[in-house]
Amino acid sequence: MDLILLIAAACLLSISYIMALTVAAVDPICRNIIYVHIPAAVSSLACFCILFIASIQFLRKKQMLWDNISAASAELALMFTAVLNATGMIFAKAEWGLWWTPSPRLISSVILLFLCATYLLLRASIIDPRRRGLLCAVFGIIAFVDVPIVLASARFTRDIHQPGFGFQTSWQYAALVMGISGAFVLLALLIRFRVSTLELGNKCTEITKE
Image (cartoon, rainbow, N blue to C red; front, top):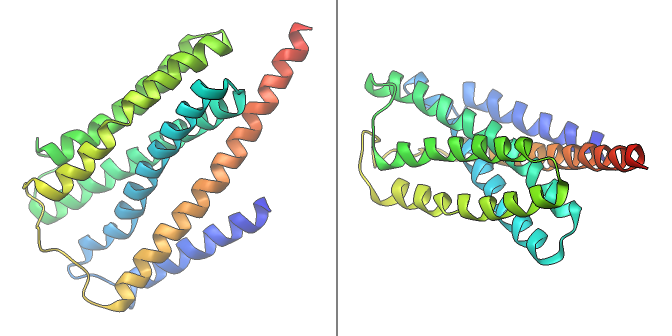
């Protein structure tokens, strides 16, 4: 199953990037980083949604599985959010000559990155699994508040982004859909793998205590 997911993710992402450089290329060429930027953005927000749901479930059921899912989603949120902000800065520099500007859209995006880092630092600082799970679940729910802020600021606030930017051909839309689909499959695979390793770590800890 894992191998199938890995092959599917690799195929979807490879096709998306090949199309982005050929039939789905955006003019000027610097804009083609959007095929990495948007899938990273969607995946980042998806990770925060998973973190939010898993945190609520842990508070309800007190099952370590949900805490492991929360931890895995937070780690991947950090990765995807870092890619989101990095590619956004590269796009901005190439398009408008500025690496960054203090607009609500960009500030809320950077806050996502700091929330991920803070969550993971909180996990690393607490030894007791139950106490760690409870505190991190509360923080994960609070951190989710920034997600609708990011979405609202992207839709309703003006900054250096061009409000009329959009794709012109069906090839471009197809390449973007494949990129997002590939990122989602990769996300599912990585969460599955990370949860498995966390569960194995928990079992080893229990055996050591015995």
